[in-house]
Length: 392
Image (tube, rainbow, N blue to C red; front, side, top):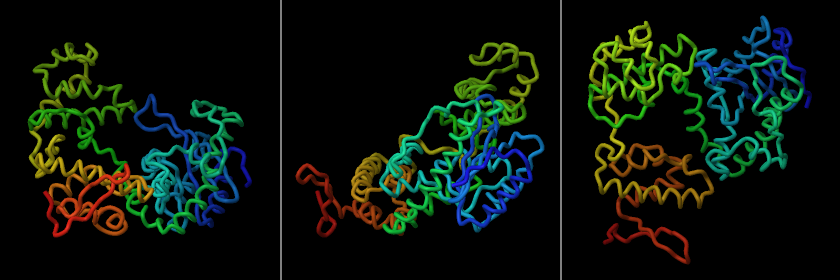
């Protein structure tokens, strides 16, 4: 494979993208820093196919990334391959408002190959290629220039090995008939809505046990306020205010701005400065959370009840058994919330169709309907069918 020197000019990048656009697939990775910013600071983009690989410097003066971004989001003929690509896709979405499509994630593919739910890249390379990666450059400050050869070689390795891994994994998935098992997960990963970070939904990521509509309404308002403040200043959310501080403000709202000086986690200067005034305005403008936005209780999903919760626990046990038998990650078959919905009587679920139904869904439904029972034989958990669907 030909490894290019670090690309820092538009003409070389455009020529590379022209060649790569004729490939059936490209492997992609990014290096970024986000410890001190709201938006990830893109520092390096690595891309390869089976013949050549390169690292691109997005910080190079006057470099035009348009050909590369067009290749990633507007070329449906080239498959884009990532490993654990969620943060890479977020960066691409921030730049374009789109996500790469079609795409393939080798971490998700590994789930269908019985390699665990979140296998790391170095472990995957070692497992399938027998190569132990040098991790010495992983803590590089990627924003600093110049980058030395060892750092660039380390970064490019993330896509060159991926270009070797992908065909092997694809071949195995085809031979085992499991390629289609990944479709839903891949579609979910490349859904642009997953990366939009809408301010009005920011409150859903903050834990607050209260079920009072006025408290949750305040939380929604001040979480949206924090999101906008963080964006405008390009600072991490926690640098504006931490989650626990927002939860405290929602539960115990200050009556006047001067009260902010007594709120733990806020600077005393907020009692009289402009950011404190904007926070107070957000609190004052908040409205009780509507019924249709109220979150489900953590201890009891709607319609589940105590008996349903026990059934959900049995379904989780069944899922462990069936995922073990099929040698596939449990999360690829069904998620906990889906099991709770099944226990509550919902039947329009992905697990009850296609390959998921064959591997797990039909047995899960039989268990819920009393046609299946657990037993232990020779120290191994097995399932037994019950005649006439009846058992004590």
